[in-house]
Image 1: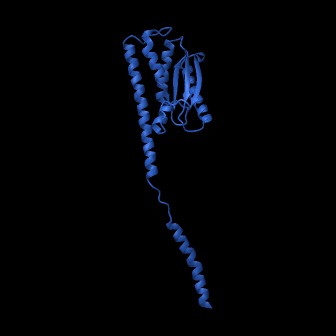
Image 2 (image 1 turned 90 degrees about the vertical axis):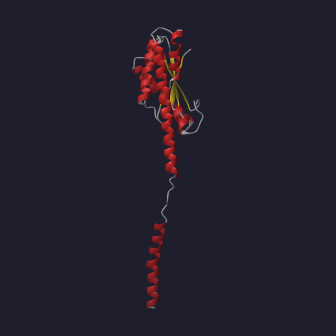
Image 3 (image 1 turned 180 degrees about the horizontal axis):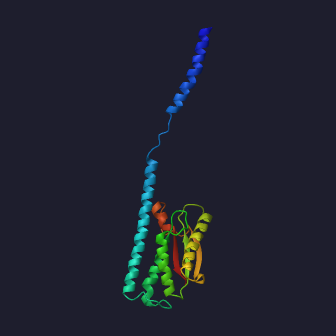
Length: 198
């Protein structure tokens, strides 16, 4: 009888210990693929940001060339000498970080140039369009586009542009400049675009 008790006690102690050891051995090993994917997305995002900055530098160079050629002077309306700067004004967008309406330093510099151009063209009114990438619901992106548009308008008003010359509209994710579904495309679509009212 004592032998049976010892065997039973041994089983009671050994089985839980074996179960514990077996559960400890089943540690999950995570693949490095998710880390690689994240670093690839980050690299694509940085490339898209650098492309946007290069585009903005190109606009800056064109603006300086226009000014050197005497086409960047002040005036009440838009004459043919200002068509190049008007084109730069319309084609130069303000870009945002993911899920944000906060103006980054590059965006503030672009808006300062836009305010300067608007002061030189006091009869011009502008539509400030807010855009987002295609992630998220339609309603959320319309609201985010509106916040981006309002952020840009507020900055322009702080620089002395009358609010009566600015109209805000949000397109959310409805008018992407790049239809792709990757970080590079999304970075291009997170923007505020400017159109001159006809």
